[in-house]
Amino acid sequence: MGVFGKLQVEVDITPSGDVFHELFANQPHHLSTIVPDQVHGYDVHEGELGKPGSIIQWDYTLDGKKSVAKQELEVVDEEKKMIKFKFLEGSDLLKEYKNMSVTFQAIPKGDFEAILWDIDFERFDDFGPYPTSVMDFFIKVTRDVEAHHHANA
Image (tube, rainbow, N blue to C red; front, side, top):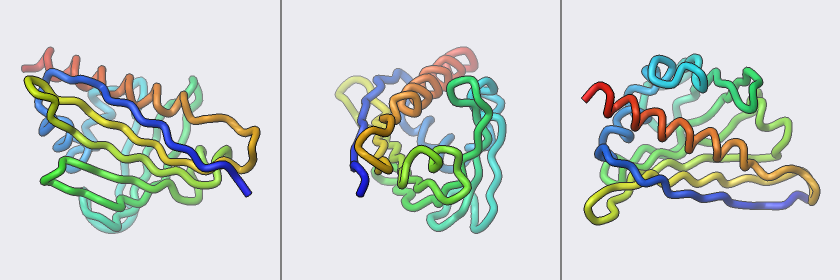
């Protein structure tokens, strides 16, 4: 039996959370242009862009290694500005983790907003790694998207 865990961070942002939610929910293919060092491609294999139940594939670089993530889009909540992906068989991360899902949510914080990233995971055993580099990846993507938005505003 493995070990279950959760990593969570809030990244304060200056553009509206709507900008981030729209990008990740309905325009994820633009990420390869905005953050080309991290994200190289996005394809919908089944279903529709931005619709729950869709099967998608990301090509990305993590820790200097080109990788693939095959995911099911489980939740898209426009009102809560929330998206949840579950990693599927064929994802490079599932070589190290038994299960993994990522939730993204834009949340109001008074005069500004934040992006909340949650990574839920199950390790194969007690001694496997924690997905801190995955969280670092999402923080960097968030900051790079924010910088891109400001440069093009």
